[in-house]
Length: 224
Image (tube, rainbow, N blue to C red):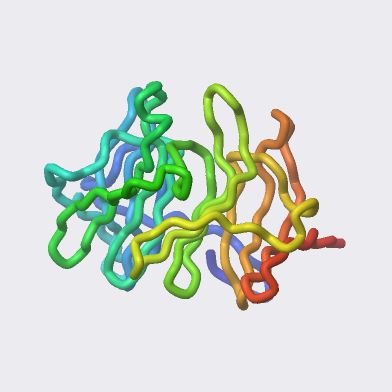
């Protein structure tokens, strides 16, 4: 998006023939001048990994390895210190509901590794779709998501990149927050996570929420 004479406008980027196929429900992340894209859905589930070089305006499909995730849709991806973290989005099978679907892709070595959940099943999230994920100060935060049987949830989890452990996030404002939802978006800015929209009780939302990482609480952002 460019700005000219005080106005913003979109500009389509001309690309080469070697580009990802059209898709939806994929995940992307920005790291070191590249946009990384994984999976999604076209006529079927996809499991390819691409990266786009912003400076040189070209796409490159990255190789897969044995530990690569299955074809995914509705998953999330964040980047931290040269590693892509992909969570959720497994095909809806009963066996997948109890898994903690986390994969790590080391960019320099171009190798996939599957996250190990350990023995304590009560302290980790299970497979879901349509959640949000952000990276903040050495941790990944995921919110919400959708389960085929139970619908949307308001689960809030954090994953420590260095410790490789999951912990539930329990806000101080327990009765105030976005509530169960999926298909929303979230970003971080100035010590907080901002969450917008999505589906709640099968209804589209246009509300904006702010989670303060320092104060550990939610607040509803009122806009004009």
